[in-house]
Amino acid sequence: MRASDLLHPRPEGLYCPPGDFFIDPVRPVSRALITHGHSDHARSGHRSVLATQQTLDIIGLRYGEGFAGTTQAAVLGEATALNGVSVTFHPAGHVLGSAQIAVEHQGTCIVASGDYKRQGDATCEPFEPIKCDVFITEATFGLPVFRHPPDTEEIGRLLKSAAQFPERSHLIGAYALGKAQRVMRLLRDAGYDRPIYIHGALAKLSDYYQSQGIDLGMLEPATVESSGKDDFTGAIVVGPPSAFADRWARRFPDPISCFASGWMRIRQRAKQGGVELPLIISDHADWDELTATIKETGAEEIWVTHGREEALVRWCELEGIAARPLHLVGYEDEGD
Image 1 (cartoon, rainbow, N blue to C red):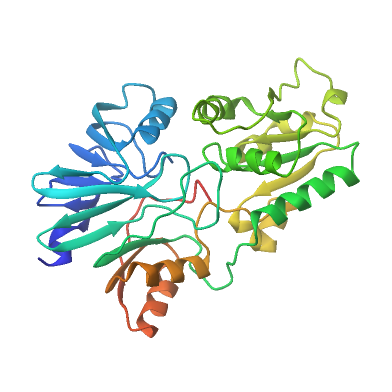
Image 2: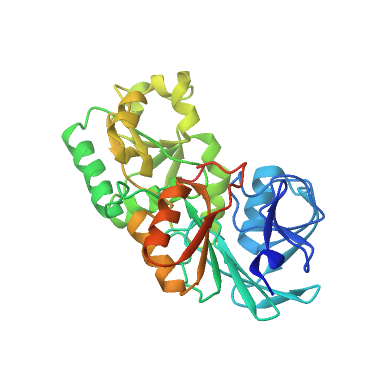
């Protein structure tokens, strides 16, 4: 069958007519398959949801237990039949519980990657390349300028700054799901054994990561009201980016503003955000990883979604691979 008959865009999201389901729909639908727990991919109000157990748990923490009518846990690598269409979840390496979804029917296989990265990450299962006819790839950092350095080097820069300025606190902006926990684990793997102070918005998800066997070490609440400024001298504090715009961030001793994001590759963006120590740590694939992954899948056709679609489509064309942008709307860069 034609690939477009198996999956195609609709206003609600990617739709599979023979299976009668959507992948990461942006509006409430009868049956949703969800790749991961970031809010631009996982929304509440669906009648039924199929996702990995960790993704279901994370959505429950973010939206409440009644986020969907019914839920079903997908086991990585095990096929599930939906109206005769086979769907299989495979690790995406993006955040805890994240998955690619392989959709197979009448000899055609399409893999919807959701968001993914190829760098090693101790907080989630590594990406698994899947052979397919059509590969749907994100392109958040789909320009040759985006080449992410090793995350260990970026954490090394943070720890060097902390040693150079022991009288100052370091405030790290990191997205609540995935990035914050990855930064904490990187600090631990680099030998940092002091308490890490966290904003309250990170507590539930960080506790969940710990419950899944991901050791983040000693975490303490970054509550200035019940502590004096001196209590945070030399501390490393992690919070969501939104918290750095309010009074909370100004209560720490002479803080050094940091932000962990692939966008920190763009110096002007860091400067405009008032970031003193930009940390180029991304939960998305960079340009080299995107192009290498496309080749690894062996796909004869590439569909490109949310991000720098045109550049990646052009690269595919130059490589002799058929490609087109999907122009899906409603997806942001929450986990960048």
